[in-house]
Image (cartoon, rainbow, N blue to C red):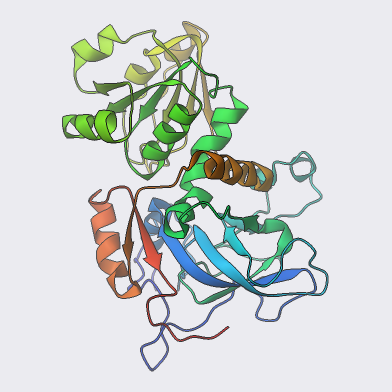
Length: 356
């Protein structure tokens, strides 16, 4: 395909029309690999960005998917952490160099040669293929254990959306009971931030451009307050009241009005990924000593800690489960923000070509 052209299909199919079996990039299991039958896979906005080549890095043809829950069907002789029958997850990446300073400090999610689960390049030069697939083969060090208490479809988005908000909340101290957290946007990431914030016993305010989401935020998700970001009076009244803000919006939007909501020394973390640059005037952070950081998913250990916390508190994503033949429609709806709050594909239940 030409650069900039979106993929026409969201999963490769063979001549019979059935989904062809895929592994990430290794078709032969190595000694420390785990073979996983995919059960459920979330559809993330990142999949849409990549398929449309909005970030300029698409490697067509693309097999998307990085919010994966499945069951172990086989393990290599060197695998000690997992066995056949275990329920496991795979997130945004499936390998890293393991030798750089970043990896050695436990932040392999920021490794400069990180191998992405989908649309990445493995160390052998092969393009990785993600979770819109039957079967995956993944090194044991990048496989997560999914608590038995969680619904599998609801757990799938935790592997990306969940850890993307949980990780910076832990890193920047936005997990302390009684602190005031602002959550910008009420989509796949935002609704997870609200759930974790309430589980941490924080005061949570949802900030949205859509007044229609007020009842959803307050009544259904249990947020403490709701701000309409385009209402100047509401925003002015809330100025200087928040300890931290998690900004989950994936479209362009102004940062200055949000920074004004922070207390002095307050922390904003940007986890959404708009394709256009965000404007950050110096005066918006110098006054009050405010800080802005970014966060890209989380490390393997952070993701496992998130899953364990979610299992203890019964936290899963709110999902709409679809079959593989609905994927293109789901993606079109995702682009219109017409989902509450994450599409998850029932891969195993989609009558795919069963090959394991």
